[in-house]
Length: 107
Image (cartoon, rainbow, N blue to C red):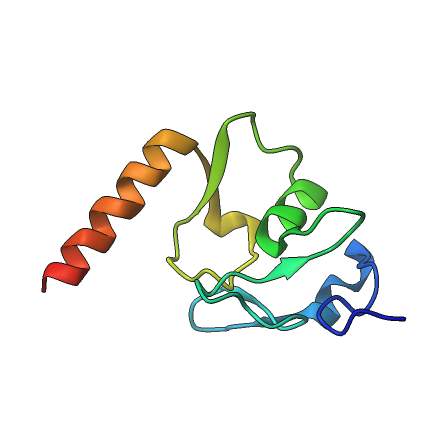
């Protein structure tokens, strides 16, 4: 039985069918799966479910360094454009994210 959330194993060759290219922001908006509560889209290229932006980055750019997260420079969690993704050490990334979230909640 097919999983409705992850209909089939994605192929990078099908990327143009899985995104909407925003001409104003240059974001590649992932449209293949429903985003998580945090706004991130996921994909299941094998046994493990991973974020769509990480899968696209690894297919087109290469592996993400160990202990690093991908930071969206566009601040759009649905964006999978590798040009908008920068590897950042996970501790630094979490500190930046939490400090920004705390500032936004305080306003």
